[in-house]
Length: 322
Image (cartoon, rainbow, N blue to C red; front, side, top):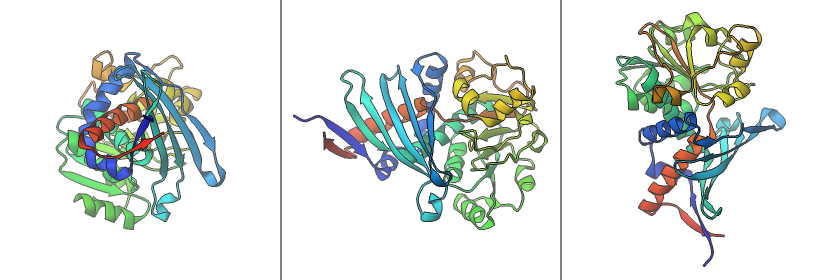
């Protein structure tokens, strides 16, 4: 009998998984990362013509015992063509045989696990009574993060801001929120903020975030993308997904260290440490907290394992001989 690989399209993934169901999966993965139960080489990013990039994210989780690699193209102009800015494949392997086990659409996988990771951080760091959400950015992560925040908090008021008012209006209409005309209006009184942009110049300074609020900064996964001024890292209670990825890929952190805004020996805690109780999260109701998201292979692997199990149980996907 030939060996077989389960192939899951974007539609297959959406049929068996949503963001809310991934939240506990990603939380477990982040605990495992901070407990040393993962092997996570720093992502490799290759520049392509036209400002595009090709990324390779490999890794292994000990629980569940799984390893694999995500191959993903980042083409920022793709949304204008009606396609995702992230396109690629996630391949996971069987730990016993080394054989490829499944191949998944990486665009939807990345979308879901990124939003779920922000939900995990928000649940751990945001005030329990936070109800007002500001979304900065109008790409595909904007509606995903609205769903993610609703999975962990009783969101009653949603404001959306983006460079293009028409796009902000569309996102706001779809989620029952409202678009605003300025960044300042969006941030005023916001208790949870998600920045999901492709900005190349920082637009957030420390004083812009309301007292007691929580920010998920998602758009700066490589140094070329910059949402936060370096002073934010020093001013806010900052937590990340994986320290080595943060120090290698977050421009704001690297710049803050280079300028002496934070000591070179100051370790920024991981969300897995906060979840495990070995590091503090929010320490005061008035404190401003930041989840500095980079996105790591452990999240992809945990999400893929969960999705593959659900798809196999539901008979979803295409079984391909190899």
